[in-house]
Length: 361
Image (tube, rainbow, N blue to C red; front, side):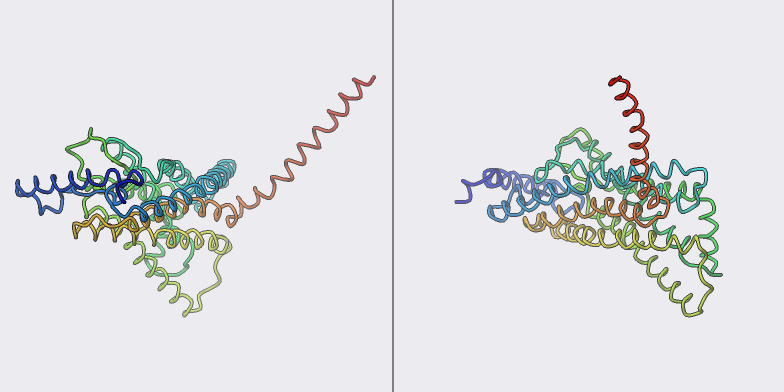
């Protein structure tokens, strides 16, 4: 029954036979229990005999991908490019918050472009290990950069007080270019460390199925990514919340106008990032647990990872919309678009009427 339906069922016996052969070969060479040998890892949709589960999971992924490509991608690119144009036009009077948001805007656009690599889902992109490592590196640079920039914004633009760390953060906000250079360096180093944990340095020319976080990466890859990109950020955000509570208890002075205007967009982007990355990091930890147990998982586990990845990419769309709607310069620029279009139409009317009059004469 299972061998006559779908590509997953047709390839299942062959893949399982290959997997058993690989495992026996590893055992014969004494490497079968190495946690860094990921040659046994397979996508459940390629080896599972639960054909109905595979078909259902792939159908869900395909439909969600269509919605993402039809809605999130164009909206994210349009909002991001509009925000970026607004920041470039107002660069002469751009403040620290505008500089940080410009960095976030560029990163959101890059993440949206990188998300186009999922266009073939539920099938996976086939690439060499070198190309896949480059894709993973670029995606992780964006991933860490967004997280680190938002943490800097939380401490620099929201609280006001005499705590030493807050004074240092405020000074950093006064020198945004230098601060972003340091943040970019941290994101680069974090991503470089993750590339070293992919475990493909000796097989760079070999082709394999590829995604942003490769399935065959060592278990340490997921642990480090969750720790640096989510766990550390969560601890710092809890510390930030504690500082806010302390300030409210002390009945601090009312915030300055710039700080008050920064609150909505900073909090909105931070909460959006946390919500979108929570599911993704849960899926990463689950995948790490399966690797440590030497279990390829089920089609439902693969479905969870694919959906979490799409939610992660949708984060850039929501953040771009939040900047567009909640940041005052972008909001005013958006409101002025109909007026400018109306003015251009009115400027065109006299010339059209004049030309028609001349033709009539």
